[in-house]
Amino acid sequence: MAKKKYSHLVKQLKYQEADGEYMTMMSGADLDGINLSFAWGYRRGLGQWGSDGGLTHSHPYGECLLFTGLDYDNPNSFPAEIELALGKEREKYIVDSPTVVVLPPGLPHCPLVTKRVDKPYGFMAISLSGEHDLAESAVGDPATGEKKYGNLLKKLDLRDTKRTKGGNADFIEWWNGKDFEGFNLNFTWAFHTGLGAWHEKDPHVHPNDEVLLFVGCDPDNPDYLGAELEIGMGEGDNKEIHVFDTPTIVIAPKGLVHCPLITRRVDKPYSFSAISLNTEHETTWLG
Ligand SMILES: [Fe+2]
Ligand SMILES: [Fe+2]
Image (cartoon, rainbow, N blue to C red):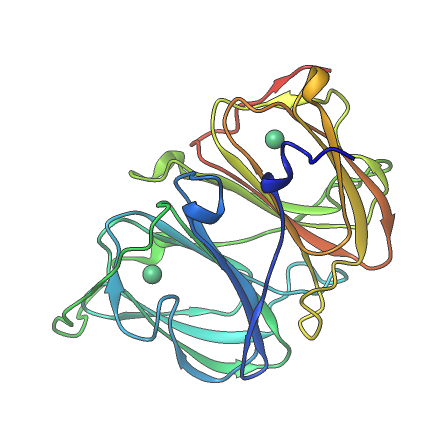
């Protein structure tokens, strides 16, 4: 069979293991040159760590951190307690439920200190740059008075979609950057078990770059997705169907027609994130 034209846009995730934790990382060069980097993985360790090493640092671009449990039956549970330092004053915040942390460009952050872990949890960092760039931050005087950065932590509340058919989400939450300067970003976090087509009016296209991240919920088997899916890429004579049954990222550069997305088989619940480089989700449905 002829080599597929869009194979480079459908990539199996490769995890690196360290101390029983698994992380996968990609930058713009891995993502067809789009202006995004991300890290996703399964964490279980106690003590100090960092989203980019352990030290207090900042980036010239915005970044979001996502903390999530991995339990489909309790999608809003989070089985750990993590302390996060924000600002050069290192104000301390506690993450003990599914949370998105918004890090505006230039805001010092970290270290993270995991204080309690009942079960492994999922962690994602979404960086609004194709190239990683960070500066260590000087530490200022300790915080006094009122805390300043509480508005940068948003608790996730995964909504039960009461889905009755199709492969789309059973539980989903959405974050968008329209209220934050420098966040040309919206993304979802969801748990899925459904079979069949995800959308009614596919294929579709966006005026912005998008990536679709499919990951499993088993922190001991990062290469296990628990489902088999297919996605259409391209249109007309160029349309291809790509099938995958391992953790995968699909890159949809702006203007590339994509989907239908069809779940063929589900053995275990899995998680999904759609990351779009736009403050609002803009979709043109073509079906
Ligand atoms: Fe960072
Ligand atoms: Fe899309």
